[in-house]
Image 1 (cartoon, each protein chain N blue to C red):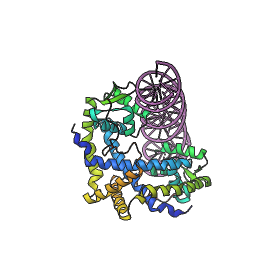
Image 2 (cartoon, each protein chain N blue to C red; image 1 turned 30 degrees about the vertical axis):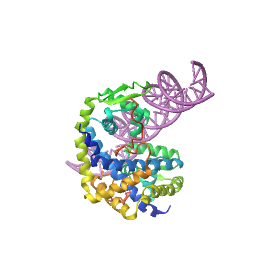
Image 3 (cartoon, rainbow over the protein chains, first blue to last red; image 1 turned 60 degrees about the horizontal axis):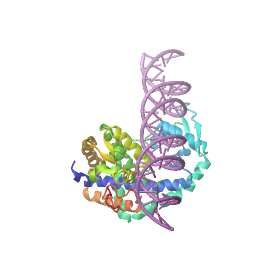
Image 4 (cartoon, helix red, strand yellow; image 1 turned 60 degrees about the vertical axis):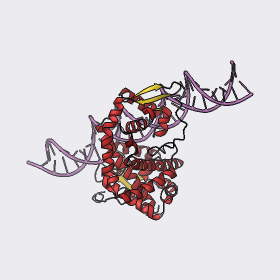
Length: 168
Length: 168
DNA sequence: GCCCAACGACTGCCTGAGCAACTATAACCG
DNA sequence: CGGTTATAGTTGCTCAGGCAGTCGTTGGGC
């Protein structure tokens, strides 16, 4: 084993990305906990809240998150139990059901979001001068576009919206 | 809920970071599987292989990875069962034990690493011109240094090495 | 209209990981 | 020294999440 590979700039580059991500994620998680939501629950609330009618079919929700459909079933179970979401039958397709954010869910999101934005500002965007930040985001965007894992992609930016308008 | 928050540049910035990370991670995972290691196992092999004697105490290994000590116990259990690692008692402190990479473990790492580097090149570093990449890494480094989650930090770059020289 | 393939959601089973409790050892301190 | 405290590692319990299988529903081909 050639010891020099550990200082390979490629390894270092990935290390930086992973550590920056891990560090931010840890900060986020700590703040989520203050408001009684997990990271996935926060993501679910965000995706639903930005969708028309504050709702999404289970499958679509799975496609927009890091979860499988069975994972979505369970997260929605928990969040429904906690009153943040409810299921709604799709009138035009009896196989489908929607997850809809309840008023309590929206309120929870309202409570959580400002602190979340502040943490981003404090530890991420605010750490860099505007042009450095822009350069970095440009790089990230190009990497993101390259690896675009299909479903998860287009998530936080505009969704591709290439799906046909909601049938319900 | 003010709908415009979803287009907040801070949300977008985090989204890019998260998606780039997720996309790369997915590529890595797929390649690891070709060689029969998981992401954590690969990380463990890397950390050990770059450590003096190809070994680390369990606690130190936990500090350098994303795992708790109990998580390390179990990963090492699995990898020892698979012949990639073995435990070695610490002669000077009977509470401690080392995880040592076996020849088979080093070989596995040798098999996996080239493909790993190639994937980094293909999907990450090679996607950007050198100066763009440098700018991005500069930004990442500053974010990483800011959020530095203590233990996990200093991982892929030089470890801070502020720990006293190994007592064994 | 009928059948069969595709689809959406859910469930059983399993794995991986964290927390807290526990044991053994070490270190400190009177 | 003897007792208290801290540390290293392991284990029991729990939970989140994925995969594969199931059930009901839909839609297309004939």
